[in-house]
Length: 483
Image (cartoon, rainbow, N blue to C red; front, side, top):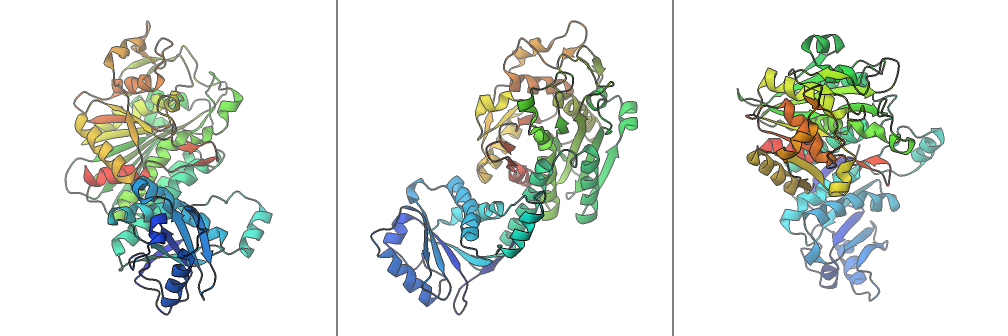
């Protein structure tokens, strides 16, 4: 894992530098733009700035000095905000790898102060690699290559920022790894082992694991049913962090379907590939919980993970089954591929009754409809508690991970009515699938409980490059810190 440190100056140090500059800064260099560079490097940059053939964006490498300077041109300053700073930071590692740098100093010249932290956080996010499943030839080649191991950030020593970047590195890596790992490894049993490992490595953390016998006694019909087609036991994992005083906890609840075939309502083959991502809610909550506990947030927090495999055997639950949930609500199964809401329903009802949280936020890759509703840059959010929603919107803005509110329209609840049970798990009449999912879950939360639902199916996994994004880990961390 890449390490971070701060460096006030490069005087007498022969260290490669990546200098991030706006195009207009390069044309009119100021002392602030070059602050930290040694004399030789400053001269080389000033000489390069006089060239008439410089691009507006991209890299310009200067190898005339004892330690090279790579100028990364970021375009126009006027269009550069926190989101752009974050994305620019993420690209830095690709530049370092292209020029085979083992260690380097990073200088954001001419950045506004409010852009420094998102830029550095972007660098931390950009260090992630997932190569554990690559073969022998790949790793033999990798050993011979120069890999980045140390990044120095210009500025006075800042232990708080250094610690934050390292925690982001760890927490987002955890989330991405859990989603990227293949389903033969990332099973409910594996999630249990990861949760138990938290107790060993994090302060003030305890864990409670409920297996199928306990879940059956409790009447968690949703969790039991969804896992019936698998040899893997369904579990309810409850991680508890006591960082606050005697206040009620904030509960983060994540859907942990470790693989989703659709059950007997079988998915088409092309939609089944990448269904390892269906534990995205659980992985995101676990990553956020790691960051919260590791950073010592002074709040009490629960991470509740209902987890199961939705597979098929002779015991698999069926369309037309009627399930009795933890809170006594009965559900007619009309689609076994609408399984995530069933395990979340039991988790929500159980968490509220047993822990009486200050607020509950659930995250799930719940509906394929989500991306059609909000595209691939927003998470969808639904709920009735305006104070809770406002806090999540503020956190989203702080970390530049946008969310979009969909209407929590209770008049649509009638479409979930069942002739033989209290409700159905999926309606043929209501086409707004993401809204339907939230309305279903609303049946398992009392009106007095501040609760909202985040559908992250639109952002948890990037289908273009085949990797998890790690989105919403920082959002939840920021939300818990400030709620």
